[in-house]
Length: 305
Length: 300
Image (cartoon, rainbow over all chains, first blue to last red):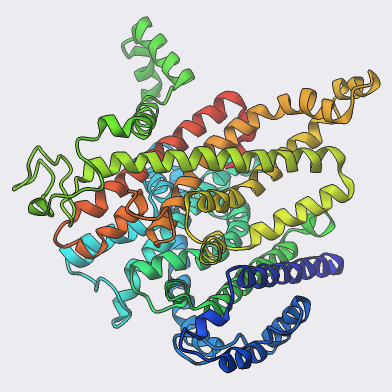
């Protein structure tokens, strides 16, 4: 177990290191960063001054060392547009993204799990067909378009909820559905096929032969085993929700990290962009690490593999 | 008991109907998806001849015209016109061209890189395997959209860069699955025989192993088409796709975003096109997988 833990944590660190290196190389490849701060009216003195401030007079490996050192102490430089530390801006935006991610996750479980169980138990029924439609839409409709359509029907036409922003409590409903739909569909399909497998297994047949009631067979014997792949997928979901938030937050003008990434991108705010990417990767890697470790506790086969 | 007798006395199904049903169940050729995909490919290849209007030139006098079946619509603009008076149908047809081109080039690039990496990692094992699989792990841990956005910010926006970025996004899945196949294939007797017969390693890889993974490759590629179309349209929706005024489905959806209340069709139509193509491709891919290799069910 310990070996597995160490290996997994090392892998996470290597990933973060690789991302920081990619970002550093790209920031140097994208041109002279001094052009962002200075214009044609700046004097030679300004240029020299900035060169020293940004550390551009040092060799690349030293520049990278400084970048990492600053990053480790939580300093990702100043946002060009807002003129304050990128870290500060990110910390302000994180809660909104986490709220949205959590809401979407809850939605995907509330819709996906019951639908998955019922469509397996009542195969070929109307519920099974509804489940199929939900799954097909979730897997083929682009998230941004799904979001817009939800907005059009429920906010513009029916006026049940606000179309965008985060002023009201109900504002979170549409973005959470748009973000969670794909995962609801995936949960449903996974659970359905896992349930069908388990329902067909020897031990379930034995339970039935013993005279265990149908309900007990479904809820106690089958569901517990069928939930394992769904749990694994929850890890992938957590990571994917992070990325999906970029798109959904843009559609619904949700003031989170994802929208910040696009704002930084469109505003050519490279220092802020770097910080956002690192924050996102950190969340992604931590989520994956957490799930892998949980999974190793649940399923001993993984530890020794 | 009643049920049993009911079954016995039910009218027998005529033999031709039974045969037809059985054939349908066995073959289950996904006709509608294939039809949609054919339309997609024809639109992409022949956009110049099919599209009724120029997709980039609008008529200022005909802005926000609703689709033909709605009040105020005209048959001149079957799916309506957008805020600049451009024909939505023509733009959707031309959008197919970008998507098709992106899919073909991306899968060719990502496929070649992924298959080569998978062959090498699986066949040689050892440090090569270790290095390649670690790179795959790292790639899979970085959120694709974000990586794409930074790369585009740093390198600029063009067809070539978009395609390279998407290829970077797809190759790890090819590499991982092909590697798994190769691990099995290389223990086969005919591979050992080829070695004994003095075949060089590249020859074994290309002549003996590669043909064995072709099925997997075809299935992977079809399943990957939908992912690539969705990624490309997401990038162009975010303003990081193939630069305007080239009509891409994602950027068309973005165009209509602020005009939902006035002209919902501007966003809706290209979105429906994306969904129809991705859905058809997925259904077709599922069918192909069941047909070629049912073992691969886990690939989804």
